[in-house]
Image (cartoon, rainbow over all chains, first blue to last red; front, side, top):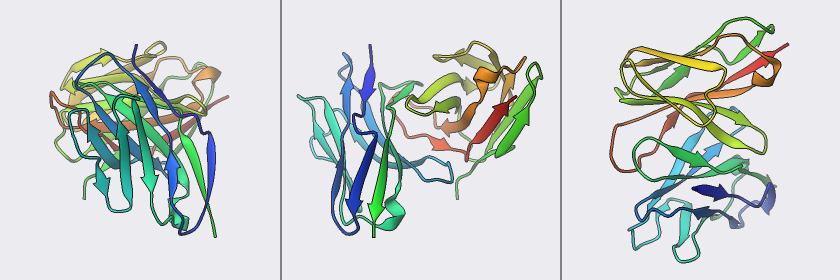
Length: 113
Length: 114
């Protein structure tokens, strides 16, 4: 069965510091994609970053990078130089193509001034 | 700018009422989805549609139905609302692709059933 696990219900980080949000996944498929989404208090989910299972390089998008360790089945999100606007819920998700994407329970990040 | 809109941000309904949640996307996406979001459970897929008039059950379809008469519009219907359907409902869309592709989400509808 496919599964996404986010073990950190909540995280605190000081402004301007880096933070890592953990995500582990389980699938028997060889081809899959991993996503991170941000959900601010306004409610709208915002796509942040994508990593394909065959991508050899870790994905990066501005201050976001995805630390992909295939053998460990982990896809941690790293946010560098945290900003107050980064305070939000963050969801890790996985898709094996087609239509279905499964989501983790989420991690709430609090950025302290 | 790409847009997914949902008909209401907040909705309060009584037990037994029929409830319609509307979602419209302007990106000409083939795929549309309805999720339910509950604390500690993440997002769970209720139904999805990959074409007009086509629909597939997700993980928790019981108590819900959907309608897609036009490509841009996907409706979620609660036939007889119950208190355990109090939740945040998120609509999303994506292009059709055999490979994984990101989804674009609406702002959500927070439904309370009393």
